[in-house]
Length: 252
Image 1 (spheres, rainbow, N blue to C red):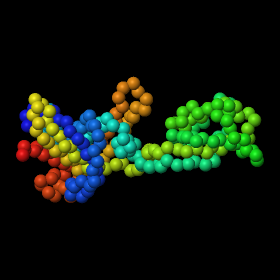
Image 2 (image 1 turned 90 degrees about the vertical axis):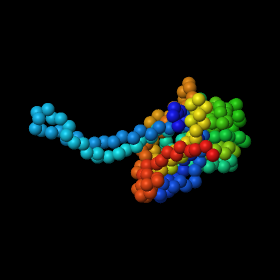
Image 3 (image 1 turned 120 degrees about the vertical axis):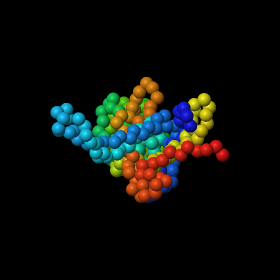
Image 4 (image 1 turned 45 degrees about the horizontal axis):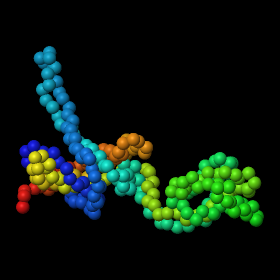
């Protein structure tokens, strides 16, 4: 492979001992994958010439950082940068969800989204059933948002019954820093070269995402960084190395 510009599919999964991957998943479209190796060193200057010239260096460490930019905001991709936990919410029914004390004009956000079949009653002994577009209106069924129109004669708290849609919840910062195995199934795109490349990074520790644009005027992306950790059990095999390896595949 001479001139090169790679594209390809990035897969992430569990990092196992010996530089082996567990079950993997495709991250969808990844726009950037970079590694940045650095070597730190201590320098000694001689003290006999009067010029303090460097006479020796000592390698004090090798570090490999990485950058991975993901274009698809899937739950798994977001969880990497937010140290999140995925929870599957099934479609169901919510009964007697209390609505905080409100006055006319207040907005209410229900616990779940994707609402339908909404019925609201007050807390009177003989409860009053609220009338849509008289006592309240549904500002967003998808968001579960209500606007209260006239609650002056009602006994609070108000209680809501409704059906909710299915969803995937992603809690933030409920996990330790994710550690993943990465494999790039790549192809060289220069001049239609078509050479195939596989890149394996055995043990990536992800930093939290530094910025996640929730509202913007352009495409969103998840820019992830972190450190390639040294995998000592893989380093014992000279064919693997301690951080990863690049395979330049020959045409079959």
